Length: 303
Picture 1 (tube, rainbow, N blue to C red):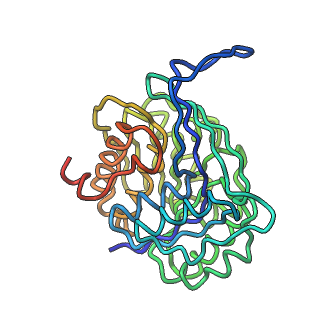
Picture 2 (cartoon, rainbow, N blue to C red; picture 1 turned 90 degrees about the vertical axis):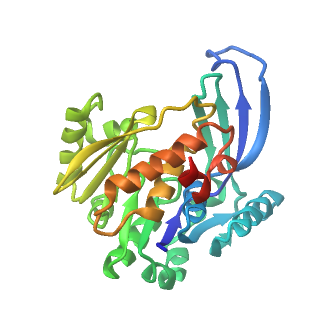
């Protein structure tokens, strides 16, 4: 059983189902709406714990009822939430997600309490980080807190996985120098490297750019096509499972969380772990919503 730490965001998602995305200045009716748990960090932590990893979450919420809703969800899945703290100044993060009839989404984020995570919060979780196999983080929380967590991890031989989302053009060198694996999607990869991802050759070129930045391993996810991987010793492409997508929200998060639960620290089972993660994502996109769509190991293995 892998011991996984996730440092990241907790959001409450408001999902707006529409026939198509509105044009600027246009008013249109929705097909339906729903409220569910979300946040890239929370999604990834839930995906990891549902795939059998012993998972600890570092996050921050507000005082309102939305926070209790999220905490109850985490407890139901058996996640360690000793390091999910409460902000005294901001509410729980919010996401507003429009999903069209093809399952594609557009997302607006209110950071809220997620932006209150500090280096002191990370230091309070130092013991848990030191005891983990790997730590996963994203950019929906302050980058200094991610750097602090990854430095603790590197000093203690804990593997670091960075999901650079939402993407920023210039990732701090202090962070890249303590990042073992980076997992962007094709859009995020292009923003960071300047190389448009169109085929396997462009993915290889992108990976080389990431290697120059100091990262040791790269996975680039490309939606319903699958995912590319590269290390200093190997590279290749793992095809996605073909399904009829209903909602792609949390698909990438499901992939990363599921991957983190199965990947060996020496990458010896990289293709196998990616196949498992692709399968998890293929199940998630067939259900509307974020955390409610994230599958359990028994469903992934049975599929």
